[in-house]
Image (cartoon, rainbow, N blue to C red):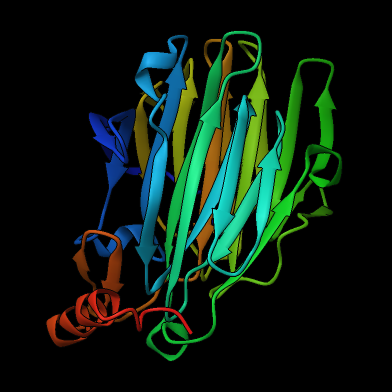
Length: 280
């Protein structure tokens, strides 16, 4: 079995979005090794001033978003009438398809906020499908203790560990993906099998990990080589997100909240939004 090694490490960088919400961002709109993922934003704060404005109503077309909260609440409202409020450990998925207008409001739990929003690309054949939304409260997230000091939570897709396949609650996505959260104390290891057709990367949100002698630390995203096996060691108390998915071999054109395959399609999305035709 070919073991996946670290091919590239990308540092996240401070940014802001919405009404001045402070985030750490790692993106790969022009990096085919990210596909099918486009971007990961980490929201982490002990100060309401960092996010109090939230994300007022705004449009999207051509992508899916997966929001996952470690600590804190996240309130969603959209033009379809969907409302959802995540609790600690919950996730929400939205497929913008041809168009969605929504708002998002992060809220602290016990003075802390820590979560992620992942942008996932849609293939051209699905970019103009109707928008969809679903939330997953913490009780339905698939969770397994690998040892007394090691826990994995599977949010999307399937993950095989020691011959056992763990299936996350999110299965109906525009492109096959596996998204999981591994937390462990120093010295613990994580060994799993991934679909060899999937690309994979790891976002370290706590501590330091080591793969075949190469380390990645909190705030870094590690893009992995191809293969099937994955073997990670925590060299400090650690938390990581595993992002794996079937790559989309298509052009990516990105402008603000829109991700399409050509500039003409971007211009059409802008025009549709300005004329009130984005959603339907």
